[in-house]
Length: 211
Image (cartoon, rainbow, N blue to C red; front, side, top):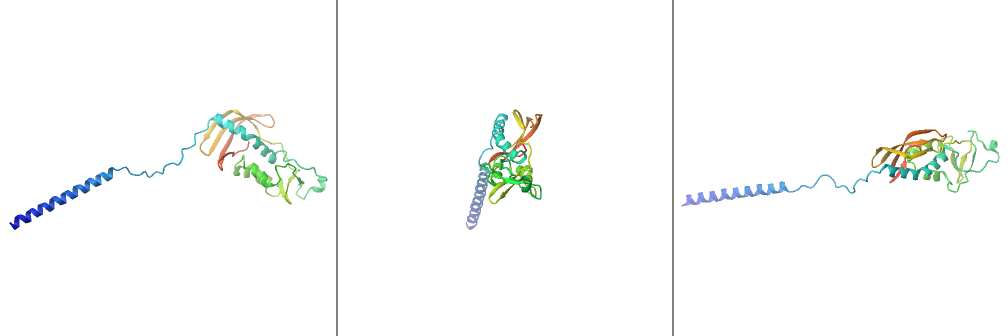
């Protein structure tokens, strides 16, 4: 009798162990079938749609007038100013003759840089304007006693090309950079074709090339 009881007990234990094992495997299988969270972070916002050639042309047309004004400040006739009473006597050892600027919109070098960086990227402004006109031994503009001065012995005729945006075609475009090809008429009436580059800086599209 004791032997029969022992055999029955062993059978019960084996059955219980088998049941537990099967249950565990089933749970594991269910867990493996559960959808796993994606390791890829969800995009907070969709990419901005690409601009059409017409939209880019309109944007360039709006930005060209202030860009030409800036180009004229640095590479053209410059800002309006007082006439020197004694040009020879006011010319320094560098051959520069500084007189006060009279345009109300520009009272300091900072006013110039703020206007410049509203339409040109900082890198473009530094490369084509600042290093020649605001920095170095022969700067064209400088602040003197809280007033903006211009060297009248420097000047030019370059105030930018007349870009014919109706001929514009897109060369390259992504979220932060646009390159277009466009016909233009130069200051001397010569026609040609060139590229304009715009880059997004501080949330705004700005010229990253000369205009």
